[in-house]
Image 1: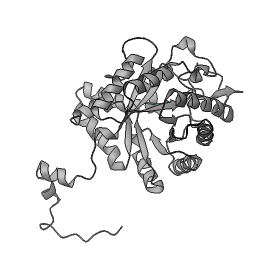
Image 2 (image 1 turned 30 degrees about the vertical axis):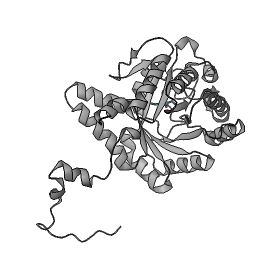
Image 3 (image 1 turned 90 degrees about the horizontal axis):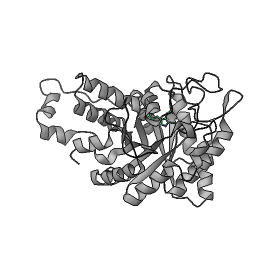
Image 4 (image 1 turned 90 degrees about the vertical axis):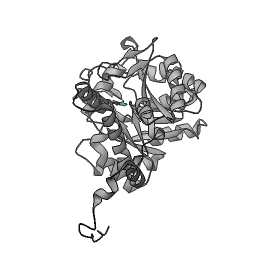
Length: 338
Ligand code: PBG
């Protein structure tokens, strides 16, 4: 890029274009609308709403509540919902078997939402962690997460979700090769229209903390595994960029239709690099910890809540995101006048 030679002050005054709302509207470079949101939602197996303590304003919804929320999404102009399950601890096991049970709460929520509002896209997380008693995303043997054995289960889980009516499958596990295996299985089962959004560049992040409470996966740290307290043997090192580009390249080659960077705001540089390198629809996940930070500061009176929500979401658009997976979706849509 060549830097244009600047006319000197006073001919050039950048503040001229900021003097009134109408001119600011006219020259604005990125625009946030409810159509940019994928509403991140937690479903539980019981009745009613259960507030998530570390995420003020977010509740686990029942299957019926999810159906109602899908109608609400349609009314607000939110195109899609990403659903995450809270599972009763007694139903979990080391292999996460409930993940591919066709009657599990994810399958029931997907069906209920597609019945209630078929125009709203439904995205499912392909991952074992809500269903494993140790909270990790894979099958463990000899103190290690087994890559290929985990993929077999993820494929089974993804096929079950597709059969339930999911429109987008979003593998969030970070095993090597899972996108290709899932794509092949979907084609083989006649689900050629089911889309894949890969959590392509997913970092081993502290910002997922409140999510563990939301889905009831507890604190990592138990389980027969080396370094059980973190997911660093499969999720990425926060220090790496070039590796993120390799991850994204692989997932595209294996058949991802869309890619995702996660977490969101601390990784906007990665979003920008991915967009510029691959020209793919690139999404960012504003994760539970990002939500919690804004809400906690707002509740202390340290941040203006509404402005912070909209500014944080606008930053994703500025960075080049096609859209944002966010717990703020319904709130932000209303703030935007939906
Ligand atoms: C599970 C998964 C996680 C999130 C989405 N899917 C947690 C993790 O990888 O440990 C985090 C979502 C959030 O923090 O909002 N594979």
